[in-house]
Length: 274
Length: 325
Image 1 (cartoon, rainbow over the protein chains, first blue to last red):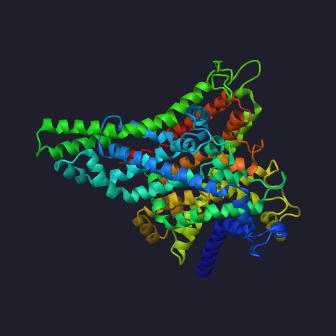
Image 2: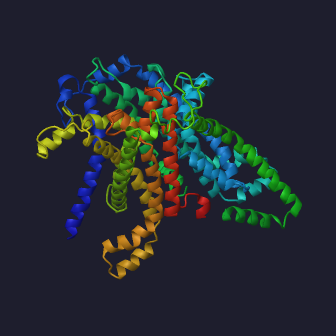
Image 3: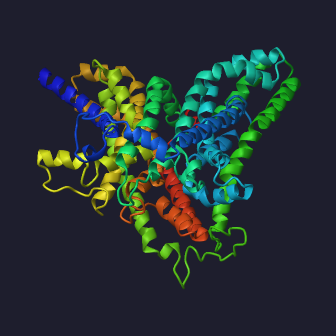
């Protein structure tokens, strides 16, 4: 009976492991295959050919796409964190009338379907003259990252001991000094977590990037990967798609694994407590 | 609300011995004033990127705006929603098809993710060697961008060269390759499968956090009394986990209702998998009919708002930590 139980446990572990990792593994081995090898399914690496990786960078502006994604994601994270941490101080540390209503409004924005702001955002972006440009994508992405940044940072901010600011106020510190010298050092772990989550959201964003860009060299990575086309109209260049997928996924997976605990903490702060 | 007033009370009483009441009030007032100063930038940006575009979308849904001319659009009332001559969104069978597809997708994918996520959380809660490794492996699907996972699975599900067909044919489950993403019955299941693969870890992690917060004395008591583990799960674990599960479910359900990228990449605009977001974007961008597309977007917004309010009220979910503390 005990052996049977052990066996069941290890089968479940093995199955879970394989299902989780196999697609990435399979993309990885496919990305090194070229020509006819691509079209016979194999479960083990059978060739090591860098043609796909070279073609991604030579036939597509993929380096430019990666740069675009980095610029958009980093700027969005910086703006969200700056606005988020100042607002979180007010929402988390100061009691005022309407605070609960404000928090609820911020939360409800994070429940918006993206499509609901699509035509209004399109019009806004075009009227400012930032259609098909990175500033347009940065502006649009804020609607996704800002609400949960505020929400998660407020949750963290509220957990800091109350004596902190009382001591600082007795010493005559201004609110700006308070945030900068007292809260910011304590908020770093929370900001790293929130920043990482915001980065992932902005890095993966697809609908806005697809709709608000027109030319290949303004696209971000997800749009580029979704729209990679090959020589002929009917055949997708699967090898190149897999190579591009591996290039953008491996750093992201590494990032998530390194910061596992922080990310899980952020997710649960945003959802369970939030 | 209760906690915020409690906060003011405790603050007022703690500062009462050191300061006079008047100066404490002045301090509170200046703190509140500076609090608003700190919130204004965030609120202004949120109004610009969320409030204004949403209001404009709703307004445009009452006009005949097209993609190249949104500014000189004419007000046409509710004609985009319903009119006697050419119908409108509410009489378009494709719209109702996409509503049905979205609800079906939400129901099936969230149920599967809940059941599998619960199982996965229970598995990760066991003590075994290599648990850290498994936890890391489980996070891999979550870390992969949606578009990339759609492409990876699109390749694995390829009708001629796909590894899934190869596996199933080797084992003998099927004799001929299946066109997973092209067939009208299999396409939606393919989408569900990829979504379940990608988001079950999220569900599992949220439930796992709930599991780890459960009081251990209940379990010790049950163990001493010799209650069957299965009964313990049903009678103790599940009821205690309910709050964590309810919140995880609403987050997943909201994501499922607005799903776009996975479907767009895996099956493009096929009618068998078309969801409300895909429908609205097709009208807006591909057909350039901003008025009509905005009407569909507004409908989606309303449906999500109604379902959210209903779920929170009926399920008595406490979303705000104000309510919890």
